[in-house]
Length: 488
Image 1 (cartoon, rainbow, N blue to C red):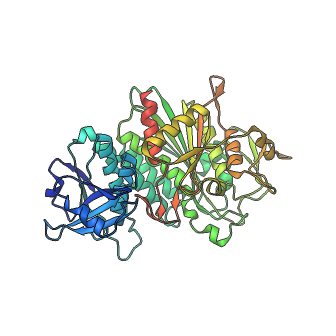
Image 2 (image 1 turned 60 degrees about the vertical axis):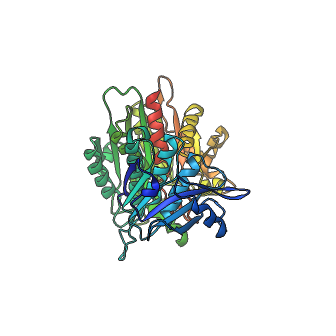
Image 3 (image 1 turned 135 degrees about the vertical axis):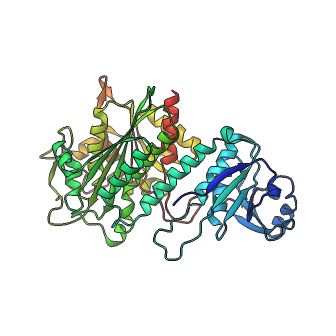
């Protein structure tokens, strides 16, 4: 769904011509401290009278005594009032507001970075998905931030582009798997890429077989809707840094013949969130004219059981020749990513990032909000810095060499997992993927792996700008990373 129209106004927020004016309050030991421009001093006494705390995700609606019919919505920031807290507060307000057409943000910003955070949070929080609702939830149509900073100083166009990329990612994950299958995802990617001036190439079954992409072919062979590999390339003139993204795009994951339990299968339309994230991050970098060369590899397949499905003990030959014995057909994401990592490596980029809803073990280890991050130390730190700058939570995990023998096969180079015993599944998947990262100038290409299995979908309570369902996680980190690598 399109994001609301976003704009800036230099006029005082008290003069805003909007149905709702959003202010903020910070939690202190003495009660809520109102963060508001001139003209709204009256609101703090009302907050205290109502017992407001200023806590994060608190939203108190007040009738504006100076403008008939206008509502003042005060969002809590918690104890902090920095850019990250303001982003979440503005997002929380827009997420909770309904039946509203126009919103003005009157929260004061001490810097352009804080102003940008407010606008971004509001745009992200306003997301609604109405594709399948007979009675759609009306989205907010316009958001105006009242600030002294101008469009160029604040970076309004960047905020808009990134918010649109996150919304587009959430839209793709929200689509019914009957509508978003590999060929359809490929069509969407090609159309959007061409509109953005990005080169797009699609490998269908014949091209995949000719190219030796045995992982994608094996995973996709159980479905009548065959696999696809999409290569996108954004190559601006003068770019001196090259970055490859690889995304897991399992448009529905039944587990294959290693069938998932019924409850575990619900939500598996979202097993393509990694591919959606790298796709939309690439588009965003192109729309922002970032001076970095980006190739994105979308590894798309549908993992279904049938008479033609991949079996346990089948041996797949991955692109480049390495063989994998399949022990669990539900450990399929790493098989399609292996093909993508080899193909990305062949082009010798400066760095490779893969993003995948890869393991349930990630959710067990880090929960639903923290992405698991593995890879080479220097690149891992760059990814951590980019994520911290946009307030996306991730945590570095090891890739212990002693785990590799657990993937020993009697007949092939590797197995795709280990059956039985206590196995650190998230780490073992990372160790498997590492085997398919190629070399450049005699050394492994810098590589990082993001396991977003939990953070890709919010199945718990809403918070900040994050409602229930798909989150669009990793898009903002990838865009920031691309910009920072371009800057050196």
